[in-house]
Structure formats: C-alpha cells, structure tokens
Image (cartoon, rainbow, N blue to C red; front, side):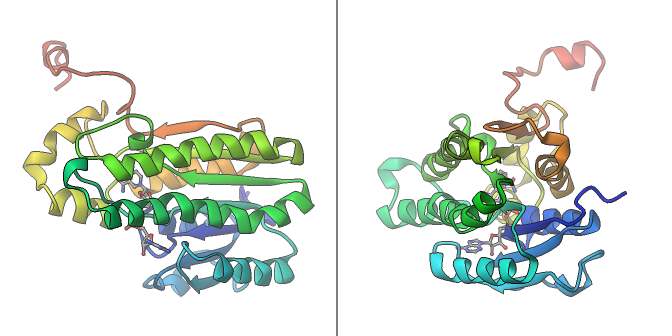
Length: 263
Ligand SMILES: NC(=O)c1ccc[n+]([C@@H]2O[C@H](COP(=O)([O-])OP(=O)(O)OC[C@H]3O[C@@H](n4cnc5c(N)ncnc54)[C@H](O)[C@@H]3O)[C@@H](O)[C@H]2O)c1
C-alpha cells in the first residue's frame, strides 16, 4: 500500500541529489510532486510513479514570488499542500579571516533565507488545512562545528533553529516541522565539494567519523523524509534528526574497532 496517498509535496532542489531522490521516493509512494530547482532534472518525466498532476518549476528559492505562484497553481489544482521538503542548497565556507562577505551572503541567502521562503509560501495552505509536515534539510554541520565550515555551518545551524521555531509557532495549527541533518551523502554536491575539492585520500578522516564506516546514499535521506512526511511520524515535531551513520554519536579514536576484530 502506498504510504503517501492523496499527498501533495513541494520539493526544492528537486533536480539533483537529495531533492531528486526524495521526489522519486515520494512519487513511488503515491504523492503528487511540485518540484522546483534552478534547472530541470534530467529524466524528470521518466521518474517512476510520477503522476501526470505533478509539475516542475524552474525558480530560485531566494525569490518569494515565483515560489508563491508555483504553490498557488498547485493549490488551485490539488486543493492543498501536505508537505514541503527544502533540499535546495549550496556548499561553501572557508576560514573567516579569508571569507568574502559576498560568499557569506550567498550561502546564507540560499540555504537559510531560501528555506524560510519555501516554507513561508506553503504555510497559508497548511494553516487552512490545519495539517502539514515541514521537512527542512539541515546538516550534521548545523549541529556542531567543523574545520572551514563558517557560513555553511552557520546557515545550517540557522535552519535547525528556524525549524524548531516553526514547530513552536504552528503546532497548534496541526503542522509539524522537523529538520533532517544528513551526514556526508554521495550526491553531485558531495562529489564536487568533497571528492573534487579535497580528494578521496584527504576525505578519509571525514568518512571515518561516520561510525558505520561509509558515506551515505541519497535514498537513505529520502527514507527519513518519507517517515517525516507520513502518518508514521504523527507525533514527531521539533526534531533535528541526524541521518548520519553515527557521525554525531560521539568521538571515535580508531583504536578499539581493530582490537575487537570489527575491521
Ligand atoms: N550531500 C551531502 O553530503 C549533504 C549533507 C548534509 C546536507 N546536505 C544538504 O542537502 C541539500 C541537498 O544537497 P545535495 O547534496 O543533494 O546537493 P546537489 O547539489 O546535488 O543538489 C542541490 C540542488 O539545489 C539546487 N539549488 C541550488 N541553489 C538553488 C537556488 N538558489 N534555488 C533553487 N535551487 C537551488 C541545485 O541546482 C541542485 O539541483 C543541500 O541543502 C545540502 O546543503 C547535503
């Protein structure tokens, strides 16, 4: 039985990585997808299970009006928005003494302000319905610091606390809000920022911090988003959920696993 019957979901960043994987999974589970991104996803029309009522909008999440129009069109057609998944985002950062203000602004504008705007345009319909699930994509880097994180980590920390505030403000209207905090997931962003930026060998200590000893897959984030969008999570709100293979579980020093014969 599909887990998202009669469900309309606005998914940003739907052309790539976590947004695309979530759109595919939600479509397979019966949802109508209102996708949005700067560019159209390759093969969007061939997404398995994608209903003909689904639509894709080329827009920038930093802008409110095009998002308002996309949601107004969806509400006129389908009567409601059940969930929003804010997966549009960019990597960025650097040591603060070398950081251009323009880079700080770019990352905050897309990752934090963009998230707020994508949620904002969905709220009127959710309030009217007295129901809705807001799912933001933050990061483990929104929960703790790391070398060179600066504006990226600040933007994702902002997404976490914005999400908790949304849970406080709209719970009485029947709306839940939760942040997913992914560890390092193998997407085009990961390939360019981590594998391209630092190379596989220098990225090894980052992989090591994932206690399961591997990078994550986009489908593993889509699965968590599905849980948060579905009735299975009906009493879950205000949570920053790490989906990180144990990255944030604690410190691992590397001495015991070998001793225990685990590797
Ligand atoms: N991949 C990871 O390891 C990882 C870990 C933690 C959090 N995240 C977060 O998950 C989200 C998705 O990342 P991903 O790895 O799938 O990256 P990705 O680059 O594969 O996909 C991001 C998508 O967002 C779109 N986008 C960027 N700026 C936009 C804008 N202004 N308006 C509309 N769309 C825009 C891009 O075009 C792209 O299609 C991001 O917010 C990212 O920070 C990723």
